[in-house]
Length: 327
Image (cartoon, rainbow, N blue to C red; front, side, top):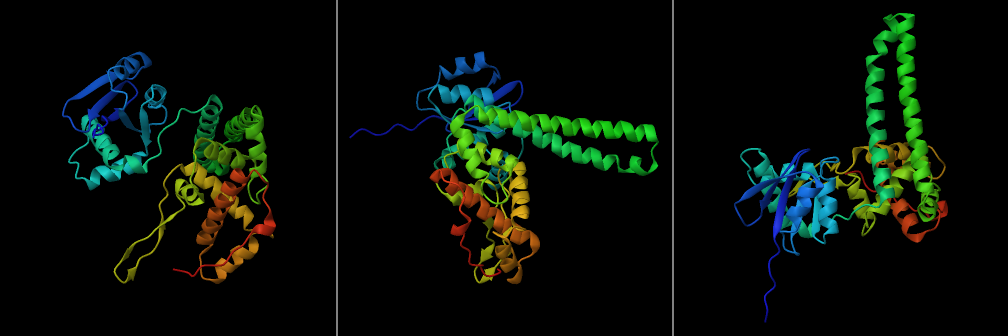
């Protein structure tokens, strides 16, 4: 009887210039340049069954993740928050690039079965992700700039007020252009546009949310609707011990902008005849306004998952709801 060989498990701490590499069952740590040539040369030295983990870093990890996945290796791109909590949990006594790479390798070795392997995004998926990321950053800074200009609105000169208004208008024009490119990007693929249109039939889901949901559902093969809710960070975390039932709080894992958008969609949906009875029932049960909106947001995500997989538009007649007890 032949024994299965243990795969080589590697953790990579990626920065803009360098990649620090650590192995799960070996002490040596090495560093290579973060460019395609150096990465491909290093990958040629690895066994075919190598498993490579890395932290999500915005865009710095993209080249490594793509090259490793295209070479046939199993790749995991891990949420930085999860790694940070794991490092504290295992008693990491400091923070350096070699230590971080070692913790990533250890995390993949022990938790890899629970992780989604990375797949190389299509050009359309990558473009949508980049545009959504840019839009989220501009919207965030636009709000901050608006706060900074409040004093000027009451005390500044007329010329300064006009200059500030022009600056804010420029940012809004940039957001509008990104929205135009997002729509064009999805429309270029007929099947993707068809599914996006179906998602927009859901009460409360507008153009922007339909684009964000299209990207998320197209990119990740979720096993069920619970996985979608968890990916958005809207799943409640229990805090129970013995006979004590603690207060539930949202995990808030995943993309914060996606979570903000689906929350806004739920706010809109709660005012419609389709979801207003649900919202009212939740409020009567003692749920706070925010709690009720979050529950409706979870419902929207489950409906989006069903619409995406059934390839059928949203049918309000199929909505069923029994208000749960207030914890």
